[in-house]
Amino acid sequence: MSLPKARPEPPQTAASPASPTAPAASAAGGEGELQPPQHWTAQPLPEDDDADSTLGDDAASSTASISSSILQYRTINGRTYHSDKGNSQYWAPNDDAQNETLDIQHHVFTLAREGKLYSAPLPDKIEKVVDIGTGTGIWAIDFGNAHPNAQVTGTDLSPVQPSWVPPNVHFQIDDFSQEWTFAEGSVDFTALLKQAYKTLKPGGWVETFDFNGYFESDNGTLTNSMALAQWGIIFRKGAEKLGSTASFTVVRDKLQRKALEASGFVNIQEEALKIPSSGWPKDPKLQEVGRYSRAAITNDVDGSVGLLAGQLGYSVDDVKVYAAHLRRELRSNKVHGYYRGSVVWAQKPSAP
Image 1 (cartoon, rainbow, N blue to C red):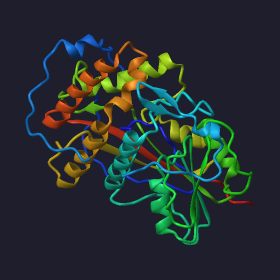
Image 2: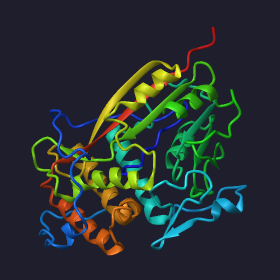
Image 3: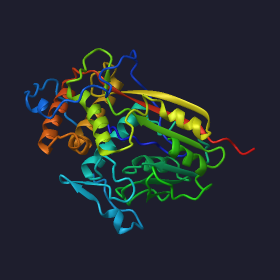
Image 4: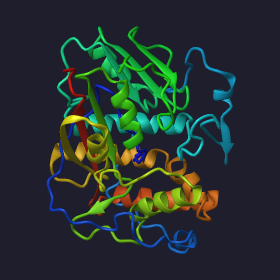
């Protein structure tokens, strides 16, 4: 899931949901026992059945005025990661394979939201928007095209955004876990959303979209020993080993609403998403969401889990074997998995 990249969206932005309806039962929600690397090499790969082809751009380009230190990426097992400037503990690579995954994820979330880019009741003449954790910049570009009179700024750890963008869109390097480089009151969670509160103009909106970094099932088709269930456990335990403060349970723990309340926002509203892990739903729209979801998950498994799995004793070859099991599980459509997302938006009180 990014998948599970825990990435809050910005002041005056972000997302809405349409979700499969199902009872709230959970399966191996990232809390089970970690399987050792030998678990995957000791068992044969399951047979392919009902195999769907995965979806298979150049996302990387340049961003103006970048210091050379930003471009000094770290290389681990042949994959590039953010430079040591800012949050060098971020778990995902910043190369073309992972950037393609981010763009597929964007399509998944847009489909799940029935085409909407955001849910907050933004004014018709919106002036400034910031997309925090913009990734490849695809959301900021789509928003800029839809709102040509708004000035849209996307921020991220790496300059992987394209240079050919709408004239009202620009990008800058910024680590949202540290102090922002924006001036107070200009465009203008708990620390992140307190910064958002400080930066927003009175009456401005903030919208965050996040999702759990693990999968669930309501009918017992997902068990702890399966690769899809182990995904969340690898993320959680690997992040702990890395010493990262990243949370892959933002939605489960309702951290978005709690942080917004603690930061002083009002008019807090939220929508819930349940995104299928593959094309198993009977509903045609959810099938389409699930197929793209599977494409996002399987597009770059090595990049998505490689760094964290490495903290748990996985070799590069171990990760590849694990990835093969994961892809086979998802292609079979027998595992009725999904992950939860949440869109929460709120307003900074208007000036008295």
